[in-house]
Image 1 (cartoon, rainbow, N blue to C red):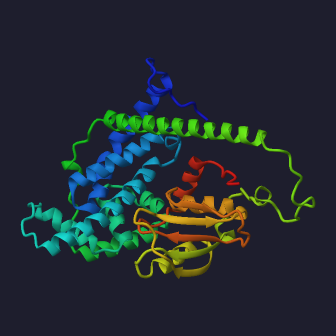
Image 2 (image 1 turned 90 degrees about the horizontal axis):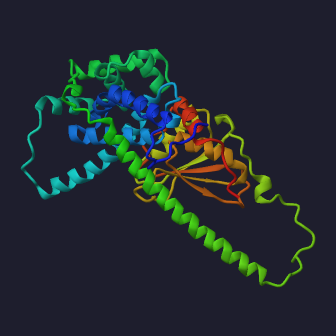
Image 3 (image 1 turned 180 degrees about the horizontal axis):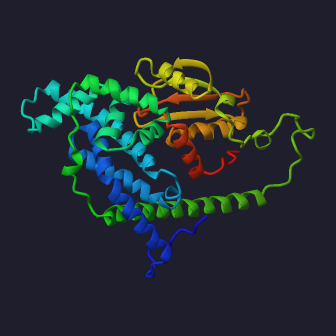
Length: 362
């Protein structure tokens, strides 16, 4: 494991310089393509540039690990798509409000761009993204297939049907309109966030230390008491029951619940998880979750590794709820309003490498 460079040092180490130079080349090579991909979902060039910059900011924060991936740009694309989907939902809510208010004045948009985005949005998501990746970003069919984790023949079929539906050449080169900001702006923003996160972590650690010292003093002043039950229960303790092994998908038992008002979300997710070989048992709607939640994973000690695997399929964005008393061997997955889909198996393996091994929740 490589050592993180120390921020704020007056001397720049060779490792730090190499990381910055390496990231700068990666950023310059792929920023415009990422804007193009985000634009196909937002129809707003400024918004697409913001999304791309945010995606690369997150990439810099993980660059020491991400740079070892076979295809790090696939990770950036997935983050950009998740951000675009999330922002598009907010735009739809705002647009509905404007329609109710009958606002007639709207800023002028490029008619060609409007036509392209309108036509693309009518396509199923796989066809739309395949067309953007192949025709607008010039990715070869093999890389598009790797992005979706499907055979090349499937990608060809999507492209054929997508082109037929579009009935024309709609490939506007958004990249020509993109001014790539300097990579140092992304690096500066990422470092600022890291310093803020470290400061918060330091405050939390100090608070925990104070609580621990106070608890120790309280324990020292309590008289010794005999155990309530001299004969220990044969039931396994939480730590004894914890299984940190990351299982294969076919060995994970799942209940899938839709925690939104979107009809059929639970069924669609269950179908996709079954295609990924998960053992889905119960599928049903559930109480609506908070609007900022991607998903909630509820699990017991024996499902710690399974929950870790599922977290990878959710791009490490789900809320984990641990129940030490649970012994049914099933993981409950409740999908929230921000759920936009699951990562591909290849992306999951890369993300699990970054996340490391599961840790005991007991």
